Image (cartoon, rainbow, N blue to C red; front, side, top):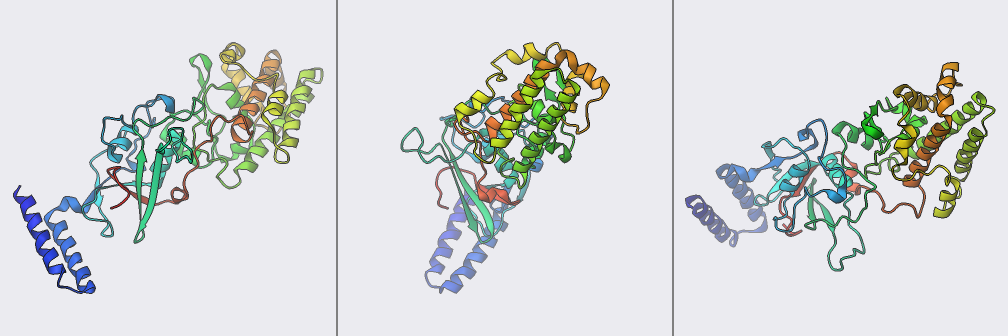
Length: 394
């Protein structure tokens, strides 16, 4: 109580002095006032740090799908960035940093960074929409403001947030996986790769060189794992070319299979489907109907994948992904290993192609657009987020 009375007295006194001073003198007094307050009330000069470095390794979140997530508050909780970000991620707490002098002394900020903000917004696929279904209120709003070289942000997320996306995206991703996805790995990347019936194998992407090979496309067909909403393959320079190169490798590997199994017409059919996709992609694109018709014989229905590959051995699973990654012809051992599962291997491979191109390119098949980060979050920087979601104004 005494501290509050002393602060009020000091403010009144300085305000009275300010009325008698010139603008230059006022700025000088304000500087002194700020310094005195920081010395008297040290907490005013600091803010909590909740950054990517404070997120421990391992799973980023405990929920599986955005639509089932209830970790960003409910309508009866006062909106708070600190509570939201610390609840959504498993963050190490109680780390404080000095608040920049350019920011208002009495406004509470949380210092985060662009990577943490980008991951949070992209995983939940939160963005401002121009025509929300609920008229009169946007489901999400973010305002960036430069304050003398310091990037600040104000956010509003409707409580509870409107989940305007369906179940095509996932939240179950590790910190390392998300870092690689932000670097241009496919949004389905998961290591180990989850398979039906609780099985798992190493993901075929070992480093950046594997992005232009076809193994990861086949992995999409093998796994029930959904993509994350972060759209980094379209944003990252050269990534579209990488997807094209991966499809070219799939086609080349299908040609290898034609040579290894010349008597199998189904291999030639699969090769023609992939080549037709390649010839149309980038020039004409696909409508919903034409794309589905092209892949009508390989689209897997719900629950169908386990029946196809449950009898495969781990060795066969790894061989299929390896065959669609390598450039060299099949060895005699690989040919013998694929022969009993050739038909299902072709179907799974083409289903992976279908899933990737449906997600990235085909108009009319995407139930929702994946998150694209605001330009401010493309750079590496600190962001000082206003703690309370009350007003844009300081």
